[in-house]
Image (cartoon, one colour):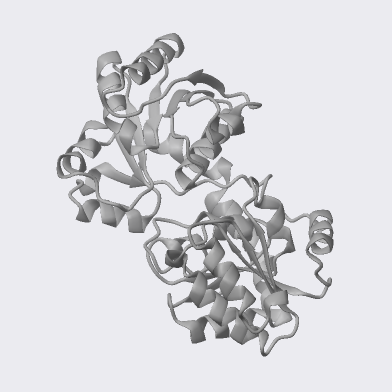
Length: 360
């Protein structure tokens, strides 16, 4: 099949990662994939050395004629089987271009923020396929006016070659971070702000450190609360056992230094990419039992579900995985789980299968 992806975002979040990973997955399984992107943006940089052919374009808003021109030009040249979009500001332009050129449109919804009333009722009806990224997100779409029969689910794919166990990386990072090889490392990766539950995790980690001298915590990422978190760590009982390297462009190597990953969000989450990436690297996870997050793990097998915002429960969960036997047993099951449910091969095949389903 031939696909033209349109994604002119200049951000570097979950939707952008999905765009890059899905295009690469489809191209890697023999499909022809091209993309209209904002050249110089993180997505364009990530796809620059791949087989995905890029076209310069940008939609500043639904009325941006330059975006229409770039997309129509690329579509007329490629003659794709599908136009695919990930970003809300491009929903209506793609629907209009699809109608103009007679090309079906597939759209993804990554956010839980409700669309405007008219769009919520019409976008999924006007696109030939509309995908939410979890069952939870699908229910949210339906609750906000989308017709249930028009909303399908496709999980975010994870590049299993990029996210994989690597003992050499592990040893290198342990040395860089000044960690003993017997250290138990709890990781929290991503945007650092209060809605991600970082302060609950900090309190829980300190409480666990009081009982487990091998425990360290690695905070990787940045956000609005980066400085406040740094100050809270500095005044905590164990500041030397917290490590804050800051933001890195590619977090995948750092999973290898972890013994467990925490995803303690208290704000709504449509999905949770970092728990899946961690499991792909043989790292068990501790996740909030809320929103779309429980769909990212096999509770009791590859990780634990914990009540969001409950410091004592998170302390106990951390200490539970400080038990070497339990943690290693879970770690042994994680990569196979991620491969079966979230690998690029699995998600690309499911995407094509759902596009081929003629039932509307």
